[in-house]
Amino acid sequence: MAVSSLSELWREVTAAQPTTPRWLVLTAATVALATVAYRPAWRVARNAVTIAHEGGHALAALLTGRRLSGIRLHADTSGVTVSYGKPYGFGMVLTALAGYVAPSLFGLAGAALLGRGHVTALLWVCVGLLALMLLMLRNFYGLLAVLATGALAFVVSWFADAKVQAAFAYLAVWFLLLGGVRPVFELQWQRRGGRAPNSDADQLGKLTRLPAGLWVFVFVIVALGSMLLGGHWLVPSAFHGTTVAH
Image 1 (cartoon, rainbow, N blue to C red):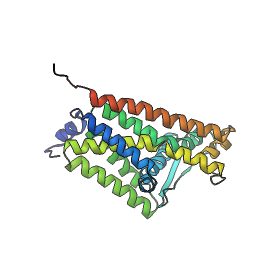
Image 2 (image 1 turned 90 degrees about the vertical axis):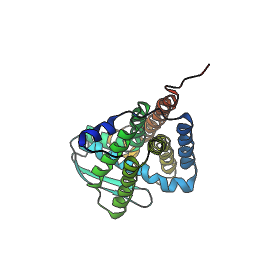
Image 3 (image 1 turned 135 degrees about the vertical axis):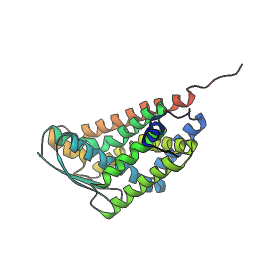
Image 4 (image 1 turned 120 degrees about the vertical axis):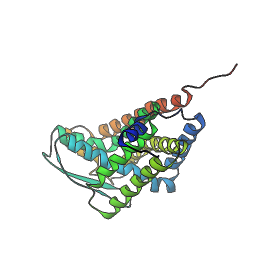
């Protein structure tokens, strides 16, 4: 991306890109699905879902007036976000709720942008959010993971051509939409085995006096709903503007 002024940069970022070929959209979906389904690949790629998960906790905490203390990301793809405020009430409930739904909702927002052709804007939003997240990280692995992810998004947005940018953006969004589903089912599997007694769902159960299983069901509905709606926005975008010769 070659720009000579801030106004030109703004136009480059906010402009809609040409229609993405159908084969590229579907290929990105296939690669994302394979990454989520294949366990060795998932173990590595799940770091991106954890970043979105903890980012969701942090964003909800800030929006509800809680004081964000810090975020830690670990090599086993777990993470923790610490915030201070009342240990009950709407703010705490929303903060606990936001983690498992965040990857899917971020993916849905990305699908909305891509459905309107805003590939570059999506990449720059990702870079901006990751840069803000860097300020709240409190361990080296988390700093390294977010810095590497943000650097990759920046390099693609700044140096790559339009087709590579589109491939990267669609792959990232498909991965969030599909990857947002698997952790919810993993959570329930862990809960059945008694290995997640302090999970977000269990914390929500204590905060609301509703069954933790009900909150897992809410996570499932949001994840599957976002995947279906986001997929609906992404796939038709590949057909938009297609003409048929007679």
